[in-house]
Length: 68
Image (cartoon, rainbow, N blue to C red):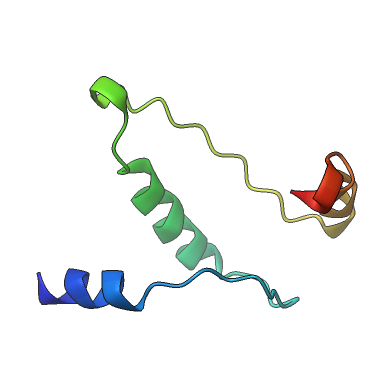
């Protein structure tokens, strides 16, 4: 429980990104954790799409004002 408390207290938002690629094992761990997030009525209706192609990411950033 102490680890969770530390995690919550030290969490932060990241706004600066690097070109460093994510290790595939780390990505799987992140996605598994995301799948455990609570959902309405425990439906677990999550769908995730991982985009790692820089050209596609650039095009996606142009789809909305402010690149959100």
